[in-house]
Length: 122
Image (cartoon, rainbow, N blue to C red):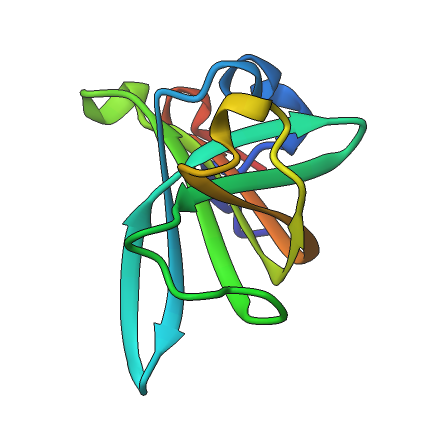
């Protein structure tokens, strides 16, 4: 029987990363080209949300996006979560963000989580 080596983990194993994400990026297709933007993120009650600068980002309502939250400067510290789904515009979680960031939730279609420090055989 062949064993498989994996770095995949359950998203619940990275709750600290979701609580205080050091980096987040949202990817989407705009005018037939892939674009990337830095994002501010939040996670609560099983809902992923992100905010992008209003003056930079196009309207992402009903667009398929990929949100990547990651951490770790060295190979065995690399870990992250990728959420692919459809964006829905929401009110900003904080009043101070209303003119600065456009906020969205994600209806997840696929969620991946990885932690290179947890590599193991299955």
